Image 1 (tube, rainbow, N blue to C red):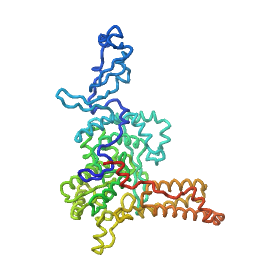
Image 2 (cartoon, rainbow, N blue to C red):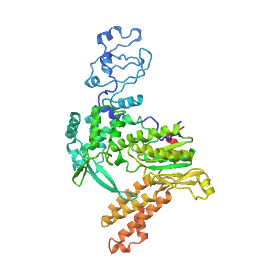
Image 3 (cartoon, rainbow, N blue to C red):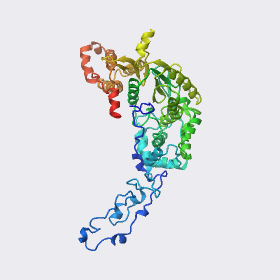
Image 4 (tube, rainbow, N blue to C red):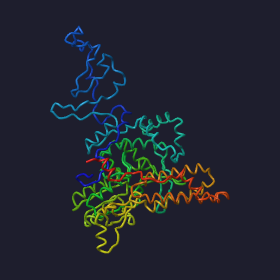
Length: 553
């Protein structure tokens, strides 16, 4: 469940970022190439090692049964050479892999040779301080095409007004043209289109919608950079990472608090994190691993592209737009150096008790055994973030007593029940099982609950006169999506409340639709609900069970 440092890991430390994209490019400049010429063997020389009679000494003639080399750690010979044929074009261009761990003349093991993005990932894993000097060549036309199809087809258009379907009409030619502009240095990033969405707690959240070609290049660059940084990121970081999810972060937090000695919780949130990321510091952090100047210039283009709002362009000196494809990776890199490494070192050197950490993007929770450690860390954390232009949100950052003994201690002091905290849409409550053991009850956050109902009410009013079947299908999709996330053990009551609230809103909407709708009774309406709004069921296992299945000990 935990490593020697006390961190709660849901995924293994070693990244499982796939290297399938690496097969799209021939060769990697990060690892030495193996010469194919050394594998060649003269056909005549091979023939001299065989008897004239195929039955002598029980040997078969080489032209009947090809003689294959022994697996002794050498680079395997291509099948064409073994069978007495010439090399095909593909084999002459491909880099062959070592089949086993060979040894150097001094007896040391040779490093495994690979190619493409897989080679980048392996090199990053072997050398944590290695800088990569050549990465832009991995942005191949094949990778750009794959990145194009990974984008959301129904996403809002950027400043160019171009949608995915329009670009797909002639995307082969356009991808080749985009690839040429990238490598010639003629590619120019367009400003992000400013848009706003409402926050659950009130106010508006600014978003930056990038142009379609910028999304394609950012997605490709993100694929390349993740091969490096997935080897560096720590185990308690879960946000916007491949093969990691918010439910894994929730499971890690549940297991960490319930099984470790945790009595105090820092529920932290960074104020306006994405809007206050320092470009200067971000590039310094990136340069710890990336030394390819062309790739660095590409990142700077995205950071300095600016924002267009109501037809007016404004520069961006700080921050990275929320909604951009590359922004989550930038955020994780920034917090990796600012928060993760510092916090991991702090708990090793200064903490007197146990410390657990779970971070999802800029929202993180830190658990402590001792109150003194918690207060000292909270003060040091504020100073640490201030050095890089960030600050903790004063209203959303709290130190609370929470854990196995919190209820008994607070009752002894007369302070009432333990406080609750919110993380990833759930309110975490200190409670007990039917057997009297400590557990954590997770309920849908009231803010998320009310905000979703308000959104549904507004949309239902606009769709009052739409076809009944279409409205039912839409409500069913919203309802299923809600249950897919919030259907965790112990949250059945909230799911029932959500379904009941949707039923009441839909019934009132139908009754206001026409005079005939006023005669719609609850008995008739319940038959309609059985079709489109089935009874909710718990879809997720208990956190401890899922955690144990993913990380057996």
